Length: 194
Image 1 (cartoon, helix red, strand yellow):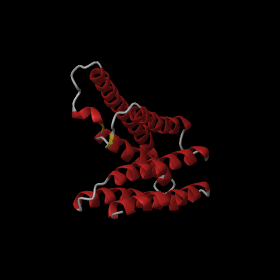
Image 2 (tube, helix red, strand yellow):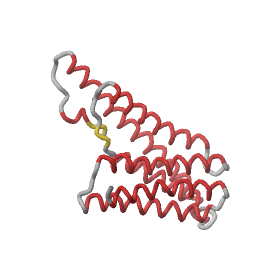
Image 3 (cartoon, helix red, strand yellow):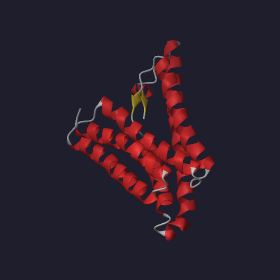
Image 4 (tube, helix red, strand yellow):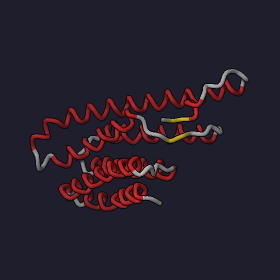
């Protein structure tokens, strides 16, 4: 256990608090919790690099924290009529497809290194900004004009990152197929879903 992992665990512990605040429609306090979560996400990555404390556990805790917060926020905000259902379905479906793909690779015996891509990171940021935008609109009405742009950015990045992960996953499976036939190995990149 190290500082970055403790920060990720702290972020996971914010999920029930965020859920309660959203269900009580305490959107201002929920926004504060979301901002704290976003800052802690940046901090755990910063400390992991600064202190050279990037661990396998951290590679799991960080995305679990991010996805727990985002899925909770999108689901509850949709349930209370703030975020459109189709957008939440898209966000959650992407994550389910990626998790299913990783599970298939692991079950087929391929070692998978879980490492986020730049498109994956941008997708997480855009999703967080979209949630923050919807939570902020009562306090900053001007943000209402930006909501459509936030939604468009989230949709495009969500689909782009899903496509990228699918391409990487198919390369891994294709490399395994070539190896079994006795052909050329696809190389080290095939062991990474990055």
